[in-house]
Length: 145
Image 1: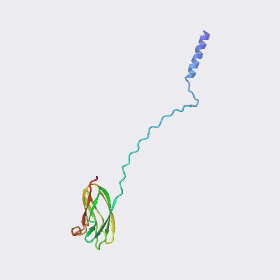
Image 2 (image 1 turned 30 degrees about the vertical axis):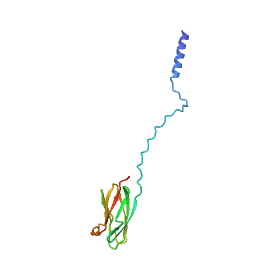
Image 3 (image 1 turned 60 degrees about the vertical axis):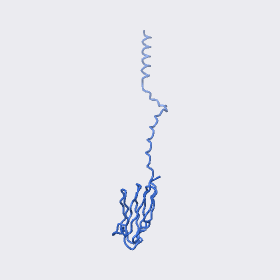
Image 4 (image 1 turned 180 degrees about the vertical axis):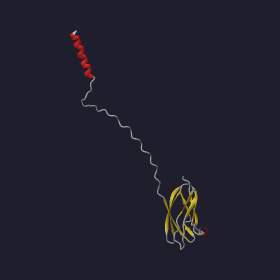
C-alpha cells in the first residue's frame, strides 16, 4: 500500500504544481486591433468669392443704375461718391436691407450684400430725396440654370 500511497502523493503534487502561477515572460504577440477611426465630418462647400460691382454716385444718378446677376450670389458693391454733395447707398428686397454710411464727396465704401433669392432688389441713395431725383436702380438676380 505504501507504493500506492506514494503514487497518490506524487500525483497530487504534480497536479498542484500545474495550477500554480507562471511568472515567466510572455512571448505572445497577439494584439487587439484599435477601433476604426470615426469618419471626419464632411466640410460644407466653400462659398465662392463675392462678385465685385463698382458703383459711381453723382448728382443725381447711379452708374450703373441697373445690373443683372446670373444666379444668387454675394456682391461686394464698391460705392464711390463722385459728386459734390453727400451720398449713400441702400440695397433692399427679398429679406435684404443694407446701407453704407453717408459718404462725403470723394469718399468710397464697400458694401457686402448676399442676394440669395432670384428676383429684383432695389438700390438707391437714401440721402435727402436723391432717389426721387434719379439716384435709384435695380439689381436683378436670375434663376440658376
